[in-house]
Length: 402
Image 1 (spheres, rainbow, N blue to C red):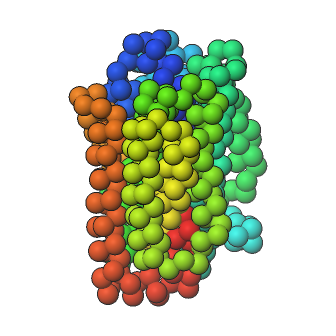
Image 2: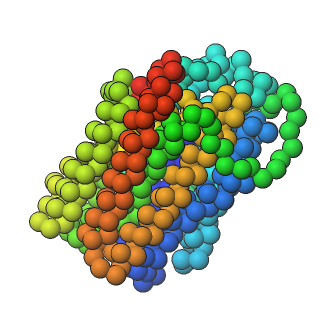
Image 3: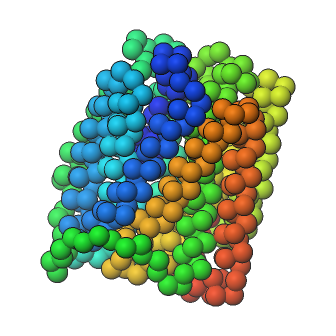
């Protein structure tokens, strides 16, 4: 489910230049389409963020997959911007309804998964670091799949605006069957739905530091996924869509690699290193446009992906650790709500600045926003209360690797 969420988010990345050419769109209009996805997720997280706490994680994921599939079908037949935006909205609603449950499930061992069937319990302490790494690797796989398939479709496939989403729809159907075979995890104590307020568990500083770290990673993702392909084509001068897809996929490969090799990095060190990587990566990205050198864009993608990985894994581990077991999915959904709100705002801002000025100017503004968010997360994490809260967990934030 986590893999499909990132696949769906990134699926149009290499297609955006085709939309611009075929439908005569501006950069701002394409970033509106991009931002619709996180905006719809915000609505879903507010209304359905605790769905898994009420119905169980399996049912929440099934609902999400159906909506995600409908959105992918809409994109496969989109004749213009309106249907594209509607499809992105459906996909965002689907992921928002189920991503909290999928994230929590990723932190469970097989024994816990069997033991939780019918209990409504969201997991045990000590799995937070594992969950952070699993979620980050799944995110990496989803991004690589979307970018490589998108590049190949644009370059070599017939109907490149349709086929990538048809493949995504088939993958969603396959996962739908697999999720349907999971054990029933409906809570024993029956609950009724009500509007879910934002859940900010104590210790709040630790939770907010984690949520902001995720937000910084997603803000960076808005830059790469929202305008990355257009930047590579129009500014750097890449003329081969498959190559562009592979260049952007380097960031996703770096995300997964960091998740695997840097699990035991101290969380504060991970946040600092992630911030440095983001600055270096975005500097390289802007410089690649100045000198029109594709190899510099490859370096920017890899270094930026490493920064994303460090920030995201540290953040998701902190959020899972901070949430009480019986409300862990709702707390995780709240963190995603913050992150997607910031991603939507940053995507629109980058698009507006790029349209009014230049793409490099928009990228510079987005990079500055990422760095500011990381600084705030570091301040919150470095307070004595936040440090003690993390140290109290069996694994702390070991997976700052991603």
